Length: 160
Ligand code: ADP
Image (cartoon, rainbow, N blue to C red; front, top):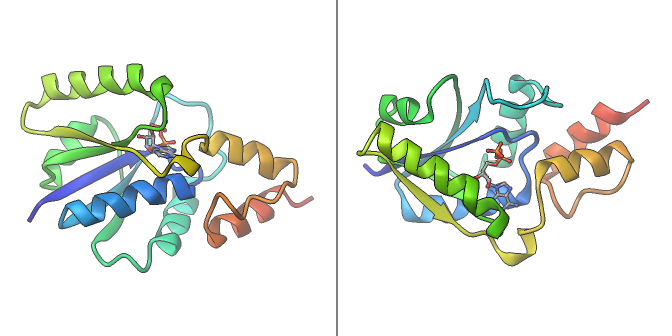
C-alpha cells in the first residue's frame, strides 16, 4: 500500500490543488490531504473545520483520497500515518527555492520520507488561495478557479 500525504493550508482549496491531488491519486494507492493546523501564517480566512468540509465535498468522488489535519512536523505526521512520501505542487520557479529547502530539511529529519513534486496543468500555474480570497472579498466570480462548495462558502463569508 503506497500512501502519500499532501500537506498545505488549503485556505481555501482551489482547482490547482485538486489538479495535484488527481495526479497523486493516479500514482499512489492512497492520498491523505492534510491541513496544517499551525502554519507560520497570518490568521486563515476559514477555520480548520470549514476547510475540512470544503475539501471533503470537493473530493467526494475520489475513493482513494481522505482528508485529515496535523500539528507539528510534516515528516512526523507522514510517518505516523504510514506514508512513504510528501506531495507538493510546483507552479513556477518562484515556488522552487522554498520548496527545495523544505524538501532537503525534511529529508534530513527523516531519510525514509521522500518529497514528490508534481506540476499542475499550466492553466493553474498562476492560481493561489490568497488571490482567490482577494477576488472573492471584492465579489468577483471565482467559479473558474474553485469547486462549487468553495464558491458557496466564499459567497457566504463575504456577504454583507
Ligand atoms: P502553503 O500553505 O504551503 O503555501 P497551500 O496550502 O497553498 O500551500 O498549497 C499546498 C501545496 O499545494 C503547495 O505545495 C503548493 O505549492 C501547492 N499549490 C498551491 N496552489 C497550487 C496550484 N495552483 N497548482 C499547483 N500546486 C499548487
